[in-house]
Length: 134
Image (cartoon, rainbow, N blue to C red; front, side, top):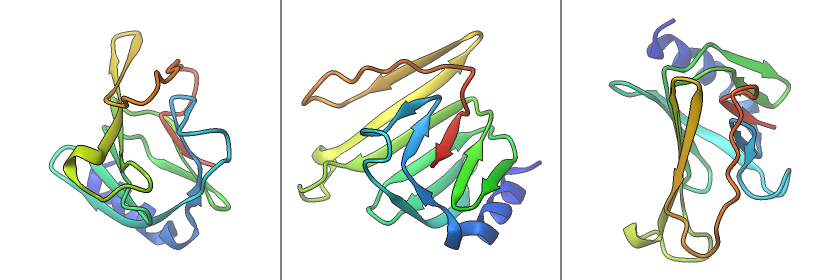
């Protein structure tokens, strides 16, 4: 399935997709503490870009076909997932742009972040979906 085909499928469900982001099992924030609503879907050169109501962007490389249950979106497999957001409550300037980046390499998932106000406890699992919005 091509990125364009995956983007088209997600676009069909866009109005229903919302929830808290999890990447390889790691929650963005506390479980169910926030709700992001999907506003934009596009296929880029080598990744799928999902835009959200707070200016957040989820980039997914080599995604498997999306799965939908109610408002839930799941992507079981991906080679890389990157979540970007502006620090909430601050102006949307480049210096306030943060990320969580997960790259699959062989049998490991290597997480990285530029979060500087605490040390995130990133423990991705290949047994979890690459991306879920619950």
